[in-house]
Amino acid sequence: MSGKTKPEKTDKQIIDEFLKKVSEGEKNLKEYEKTLNSTKTMEFEKAYFEDMTFQPGSIAGNIFQIPSKEKNKTYFDIPGEGFDLSIKHYSFRFKELKDCSGMLDVKKKTVFLDPRDCNNYVILHEMTHAYDWMLDHCYPYPLRDILIIRLYDKLKTKIEALDKVLMLFSHYTYQYNVINGKEGDHSTLFYMKCLDLELRLGVPFGTISGFPPELRIKIIRKKPEPKGNEAGR
Ligand SMILES: [Zn+2]
Image (tube, rainbow, N blue to C red; front, side):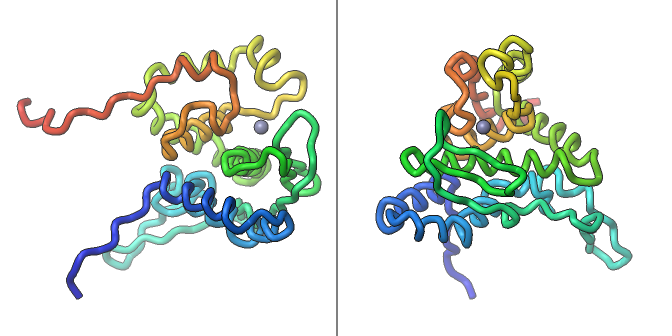
C-alpha cells in the first residue's frame, strides 16, 4: 500500500507526552507507581537505553553479532545465563527521601523516588544508575568497557572538548568534593550516558546528571557539519 508513512516521534516528543500524562491522570501516587513498574520504565528502556542493554543495532549491540551461513542474515547471541540487563528486575517506589530526589537500593533492587520532587529526568537518572550497576556486576566483564568506548566515540562527535569535561569530572578533588563525596557512585559511564540522554532529549546539560554548573558550562554542542562539504574535495 502506498501513501505517506507517519513520521517517527522525536525523543523530545516522547518525553513531552509522558510529562503530559503525569500532569493529567497520574497524580495518584499508587496508580503512578503501577504505571512506572508496568510500562513507563520499560518504554524508557526501549526509547533511551538500547545501548546499555546491548540491543541489536545499538552502538554496542553488534558485539554479539554472528555471521550466518544463510545469505544476508546475521544472528545475535546473548551470552550466558542471567545476562539480562533489563530494568524490569527493579521496582520503583515512592518514598520521602532526605537530601535527594531519587535513590537506587541495589540490595532491594528498588529505586526510591521522592514524590515531592519526582519527574522523568529523575527517573532517567536513577535508571542510568541501575544499568551502570548491572553492567558492573554482570558477566562477561568487558561488556561495560566496550560500552564506555562506544559511548565515548559517539559523544566525541557531538561535544566540544569532551576530554576536558571528562578529565574534570574524573579529577579526584572534584569527585570527592562535588560529585560523590566519600561514597562515590557516579561513574564515568554514568556521566557519559547522562550527556547522551541530555543531547537526545535536547535539554540543558546537567538536567539528568544533576551535576553543577561548572561542569555544564564547559560543554559545548558541536555544530553539525554543513551538508555538501564533501562535494568540493
Ligand atoms: Zn545519582
